[in-house]
Image: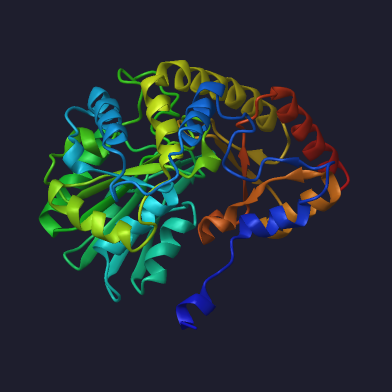
Length: 386
């Protein structure tokens, strides 16, 4: 067994969740997914595909019909994105791993902006890369980027920069000006950018003419050293379907198809058929999802802000409230105690980076906002006896 694998840390989020699985009394907000099922018409598209007997392999890069639908969807929001830049993947996680496999060799330097979903820093480490982290800084509960520090960290020795915006877990979101500065700097250093933009539609600022957070696609050309990862999971309520896509320079698409062959070969056809329908009818799904998530955020955050010792700010994007609980510096221990003693399931902040020790992540994607209020009540009752 490789030493890297032996040294690989288990997910602290899973560690907390495992402590609560099987307990019907636990209010679970630890995973990054809605508790609302995928819309019927998307599920029906997969059922129809299976009934037609579409149980065979597809093109490595995905069904042409789906890639054309993705092209139309992305082009409407970010300008022309041709089919020749797209690959369909078996989920966003698979897309991220494929991108890292395509761009990083053992020993390469990778810079990542943290706190971040742990897969983004674990994946290059699994491949033997040297990962350096540039931390966001909390200011009154909101996390912010020191742009000068990030640009100083990215040098000609940096093979890849990984940025997740809107960010899981903090809700931090890059501005267009920050993206432009990063792109211009990485052009000078020859550094690839891997942009995890799976939350781009879950964005709550008012300046959203295209219904999206600022994207690196808006400030780059097709041949820039940029790979963007997307997923059907969040905006289409399709977490369990494992369907995503990559946008990349045209020169990378054929090699990516070869890499797909040696990973998963292809995404399953019936899930791809569901993806086509999801994109074609996106206006029936995503705006409603975003409006509901905004209501969830605006329900949860004021309730948390009213709890003594809690420091939290409304997220600009994503589906999480990331908050600091004064006097409880061991996030993992606190999260486990909340499960055991309060029946409240949250994700520990140190799962996302050492600098997030003392913080907790609460996924507010709940179809019943009453569950959020009950969760805060449980937190308050638990704190009252500490």
